[in-house]
Length: 278
Image (cartoon, rainbow, N blue to C red):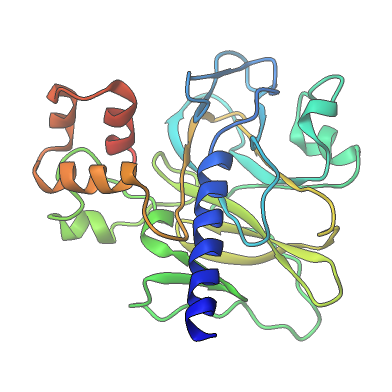
């Protein structure tokens, strides 16, 4: 029975890892000003400040984070990235709304927040702020969810040294709205059959941002590439065993010092991009 239990855990972990890799891309349905790259992992707003709405390719599983990194900023606009969840299947939308706030939210069954240096959360009377994980804990823990923290944290110095060699690179965490900052969203099921939505900013849980979401319905991630946020990239998060692609990246990064040297390697372009965006 003990061996069977371990086998079931391995199967579950493998299934979760495969689902996460599948969902770690944007849906083909998106706002009119959005351009996706060939892998559908990078979304760029090519004009104006609106019509930048994007969705996850698949509905999220309970506890599964949809994580993006801010790649480019655009001066001259007020406002920042917006993220959240929706129970609307993107494929069913006749027209993609111009804004997540208020247009998509006004359609109902959608919960979206603007990312700022501070963050709103839904508090219950007498409730304390969410407990922070111990400083040395390599995992972010949200109820029963456990996510490797290092993947969640944005760094200010990618490209100069390998993260394996540079301690400052490991520790230098960015403000929420800065370039290279990483923002994620997930939902945690509750005993009453509903779910709480959590927004994660550079490895820190902001606490429940919305409560009583319909956990029985498919919930898609919403990413609004709005105003001063110009471009974002989906960052895959692996809960189970690392993929072959991840193992290849680790080997490559161990043998280089300057991250920009990856451009000169004789590797397929998708693997180069993956190695440069951990």
